[in-house]
Image (cartoon, rainbow, N blue to C red; front, side, top):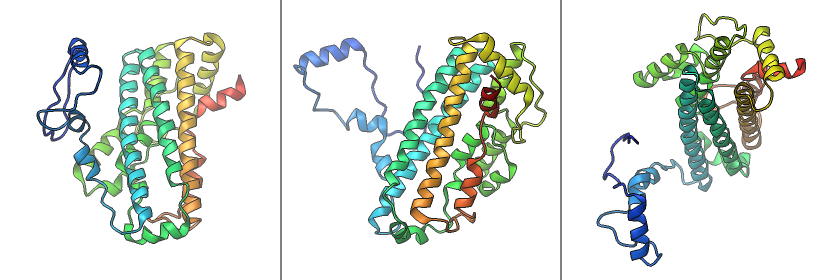
Amino acid sequence: MTTRRMRGPVARKVRAIGGMERADRAAANHGLPTLEFETGTPYDDYVGTAVLHDLQRPITDAPEELAFLVTTQVMELYFGLLRAEWTLAQRLLDEDEVTGATTAISRSVRHFEALNAAWAALGWMTPAQFNSFRDELGEASGFQSAMYRHLEFLLGNKSESLTRPHRRDPKVYQGLLDALGRPSLYDSVLSLLARRGFEIPGRGDHSAEYVSSPLVEAAWVRVYAEQGSGDELWTLGEALTDLSERFSDWRYRHLMAVRRSMGAKPGSGGSSGLSWLERSLRREVFPELWSARTAM
């Protein structure tokens, strides 16, 4: 049985139809698409196109700003999608549903590839073009994205200080504090390994940033040595490695987009800009999946 959860205001509910009705409609239309509807189109009702296209409100008349804004909004949507997939994967891991969790993680790798491809939409932007609207953005910076912060926390990159920009928004701030204190996706992976008999160190403070462990590295070496290709833990490890690699790709493409559009100028949000991104690029997620390869 399928449950339908509606989020936010919806003008009209899309009427469900089954396979037989679809076949009858196709026959009645002689294979052509339906052109008449009682109200608006079901597509617009489902996607919320009126709301979606009303969200692009540039604050300057610079033609480059619309591309910048749309690309940023697309990235935000992918952040939300990735969070949903990783939250699902974490729940399945906690329930020992390893295959289902790996499927969700592998699916998210494809989402990440699409997210990373979005940077290409800004690859043409020169400093002069960015400068044509940058000042009007004020202190707005992608660093302030709460949804992106949720992704970092799920990956184990925890920092209480990075929740502070959101203190004036109680709902968002509390959501980030809750995420900060909960186990990360990788914590759930390591708990699974512990339940399977691997020696895994305890994690007392889930709000602290994850620190690499020789015991965890040894556990992954065993997974790859003893389980072999096709085993569910081996497959999980490879899916996580793919995810870690795509996340590194994201950081690199972000760095290069900034480098291309503004060079080493200070960031809009108060950071040093390029050097801040260079430091973050050196931090790996799921580090033992990489270090274990040296020991294999």
